[in-house]
Image (cartoon, rainbow, N blue to C red; front, side, top):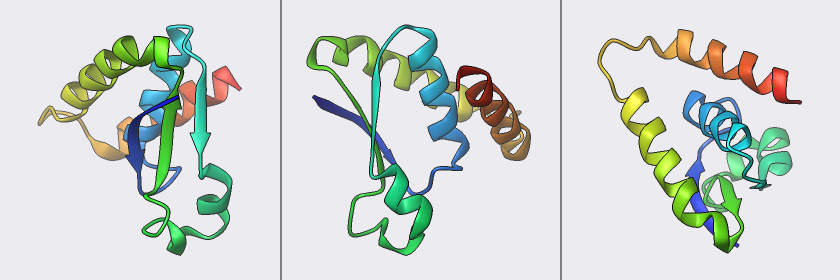
Length: 95
C-alpha cells in the first residue's frame, strides 16, 4: 500500500475530488484516519491528516491522477466553495 496524499480534513475539496477521480478510474482507495479525524479534527496533525492510500500496483496511475487534480484545483479561475460543492456531489454519487 502506498500513500498518495494527505489532507487536513475530510471536507477538503482536494480530498473529495481526488477520491472521486480515483474511484471513477477503478482504483480502490483506503482512507486512512478518515473516521478519527472526522470525529476529532484536532488530532489530524499528530496523525498526518487523512491519508489516501492505494495498492502498490495502482500507485503510478493514482499519482498521475493526483497531479491532474492538483493542477486543476490550482487554477486561478476555480472557486474553492464551488469546487468543494462539486466534489461532495460527486462523492455522494459514488457512495
